[in-house]
Image (cartoon, rainbow, N blue to C red):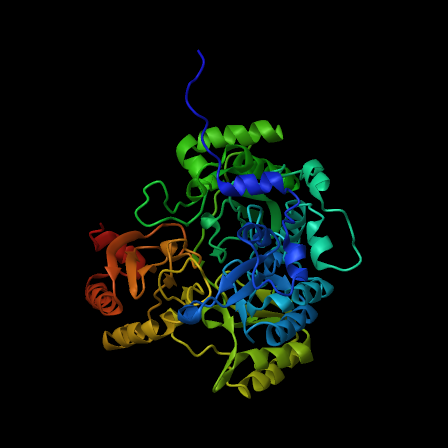
Length: 555
């Protein structure tokens, strides 16, 4: 029987990728055209694959659109050398807005770069051996890994595996080098695009982004279950036995669209360590071949698993690898978040974990974090690691250096003791306004003051030592992972947020929607009532998220 149904229409992005699989667009021509104030709508999409977002300053829209670029690095496992950090610090000062922003995927973002400075920014990053390719786009994003060298002797090994996997899953287009680096002239004309097929991704890459992470129990410091693909380290007596593979996580959604929802990854099975790359490529290829290319809001791998099931997925991956999963091995996570302050590493040296509010490294009056970090890193040359909770670790510090580092930071108003409330230390926010074009509400600029009021409530109730995991985003895409927080605030309109409650401290449970479209006063009123009940009705050792999940009547 011949079907009379019309084929589903592919998204505009699919057509762009098929026409220009080199991902070059007209980026080079626009860079050369000094009269062009911005890149075209097509190039807006291609730029993402190069680690660049074209944005405009939304604070200035009443006077017209002021275009600028955001550039995102790619540091597998969040690890970079002292020299790389210094290069990033200098570029932030010279070409961006004099801040470095740590992302929730262990990268840096540079905000406020103008078009005339873009090529030099990219060239300087690459000269410092920092890449931005595939930091955005419909490809594997930055591969995350545990940054904390105090938790396991396997941390450095896992970081190496993250780097190796990042290289293996990177797109192979020569356009990146041709456009941004000197001395690599190649033909990127129509014939080159017609003939190019990426060996892993094909001509049209993935339906949407793909995120991978490693985690080492018992610390879930990367929120492993929020990733498309995750590898949970299974070890015995400090020896790596293999990984439990998890798949199908992702938090982005759209308000009022039931087709979209946050989802935690399923545990699929166990694999031997030498098969890591084979399985990673197989999982990515399932997304490539079965992801929805007709609706970008429904295009993540999580929807494939939600609709086809984990048993189907397991069989599909096994068929593509020719290898059977073993039964998943037991593991236990006890908490999410970072280890801050001075901590001894497994090799006898120390690392210093410093809180960076909402990931923004900058100088303000009385708290010159950017300058203090620059001086410490320049003088003592520690390895730098960025965390998934937007904090920074200075690694491999010798015991005799600790006092001088403490003094130098203190001269810039920065305490090695991270003298903030436990709730503030556990908080996160996305950038939102004025730079993000998707933001419906404030986030980074609003959360600090909101937390001050929450801290006041906790003090009034005698709960000032309590840790509440609070995360805020300016839209439902969930870049700060609000849907696994004990208290999640998701922007719906300017000054209004959906209030989610009930995540756990291990990052293993989604919270639930409690109230919609609340302003700050209503949010605080709701929290005051529930925190009062929490104080009097909690069970021994119970966290606020567990209490909320037990007592709150959700929408």
